[in-house]
Amino acid sequence: MYQLTYYSKANQNISQKDISDILNISTKSNQSQGLTGCLVFIENTFIQILEGDKFKIETLYKTLLADKRHTDLVLISKGYSSKRFFPEWGMAYCPISDKTSEAFKHFQRNLNLLLDLSQPTTNVENQFWIIVKLKLSQNRIPSQPGTE
Ligand SMILES: Cc1cc2nc3c(=O)[nH]c(=O)nc-3n(C[C@H](O)[C@H](O)[C@H](O)COP(=O)(O)O)c2cc1C
Image (cartoon, helix red, strand yellow):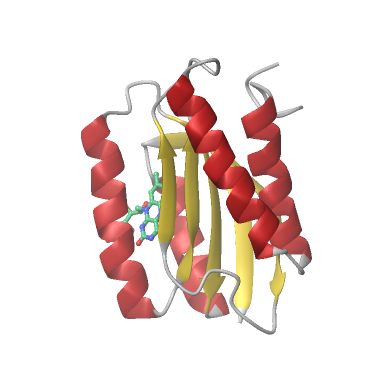
């Protein structure tokens, strides 16, 4: 079992339809390839963890690098794991940029709950959650290319 996590900047013109297209293709294609993981979208940043066969994940990552719906991909961590962290594909989606809103607080509570329950063990899992937490608590990830 192989895991990979990265974050990226969503294209400025990304639409609701783009998001649902990504979700649809990912759900279908990942399932047929035995890939699982989680895609988080917070304030124009994608954070994704993928797990499954190493070759399949690296092939998908090359496809992701060429996908015009996002840019500035930063590969945070990759490596082997003895078991899946996400037994099913999932995506947490937050369209809200106002962090004081009730909807955002609700989203934040849910993710933090998931975080407390999930107990990451591998470096890839830890790095994924660190970035998600950072994004939940502040607007920018330090040293993200193109944002300085
Ligand atoms: C942030 C982001 C995450 C994505 N995650 C996946 C994924 O997990 N699985 C997948 O098959 N495609 C995913 N895609 C879509 C792929 O980039 C690509 O469009 C899709 O796999 C179809 O590739 P193809 O046209 O080469 O068949 C994602 C795209 C974006 C922008």
